[in-house]
Amino acid sequence: MLHYEISGSGTENLVLLHGFMENLMIWEEMEAFLSEKFRLVKIDLPGHGLSKILDEVHTMELMAEEVKKVTDKLKIDRFHLLGHSMGGYTSLAFAEKFPQSLKSLTLFFSSYFADDAEKKEQRRKSFRIIKESFPNYVRAGIPNLFSENEKDILEGKIELAKEIALSTKSEGALAAVKGMVERTDKVSVMENFEGKILVIAGKYDNAVKTEFILKNLPDRTNIKSYLLDCGHNGHWEKPEVCAAIINTELLHNMPKKLIF
Image (tube, rainbow, N blue to C red):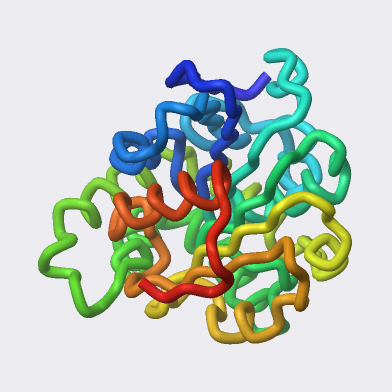
């Protein structure tokens, strides 16, 4: 069973899935701004935080199945699911396998497209570096996930992100990267999922192709997107704005496609 923590006593269950080399601690700042109507279920994905490594390759489907075990244990029937980056990939796999369990799906600085050939090759090249020099991999990569325009202001949060990443077992990171290489296109989920779909993206996100993702969103009334003035880590860069969008969209309704 994956490690998880619960906070809040609201009536709306919101399951939060962190990204690659993160853990459930990443939600701490944003949590302060989330509505009291939410009950938050924060989960450590396999090989991250306090959750064990389950296999040599952690596919998005495997991780989705493990998340389902947690929600089944908690007897949560229908809930809101939000995933950051790799957590978004896992959320899409969950929505594909267990759509009846979800009220909404939020892609939080993530993508519904599979990696292109260049990105896959980039990930494969990282296998050796993760095995042989994981601390250097973390220290070199983490700052690039934050907006270049505000790195001086965000210095403390960049250090926190490094600290959390370095607490990840290198074997867990490697299993996740191998799983991300294998992940498949999930455009069909975006086209067929019947609940609300919320997409929150960063203008200066170096990890995903924000413009391409927003441009190619299916034209459906249940999909709403927001473009924020930040990098890949909205939970640290714009926690109050991100929380306000989540509160409004998952608990109420707003016009389509706003820019903050």
